[in-house]
Length: 173
Image (tube, rainbow, N blue to C red; front, side):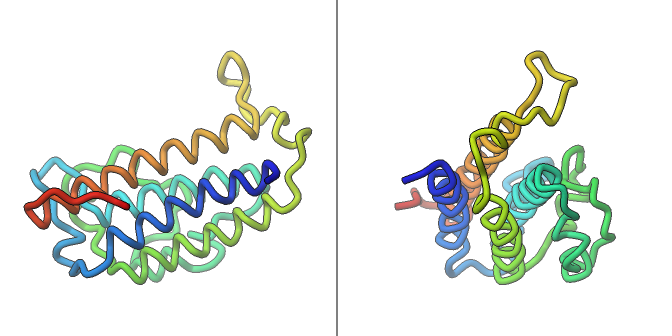
């Protein structure tokens, strides 16, 4: 297994987990929030995919699928490449109410772009500095690990919320 295979597997596991979490849930259940200030499964899945799209497209030097491939319109949202959900308040979280097919379709589109980029990844590319605002500066490799970490954290939150939705212990196998 090479570096690209490891990274692809990491991203694919998030997608697979979302698919299992979504299985059998209604749009109402995807939008469930245990408190008005909490996130929903739908919002978490949308947000983790938006961050993934934003960060990986920047690394690859491409436009986000959100804008270039028309995903914003499919979500009935403005194609603002900066809107990833960071700083969303309760009303904005509640407004994200897509069905699971749309969420997984967007995730698949972002994965396709990511996997294409990873097909040509080299050790030199992983060491390329992309953000000098930090000490030490952020490299491509560090940013990719950050995207994977953020995605797995939010995917784990969707598992927890699924248990709350069904009012039972539920876990991803």
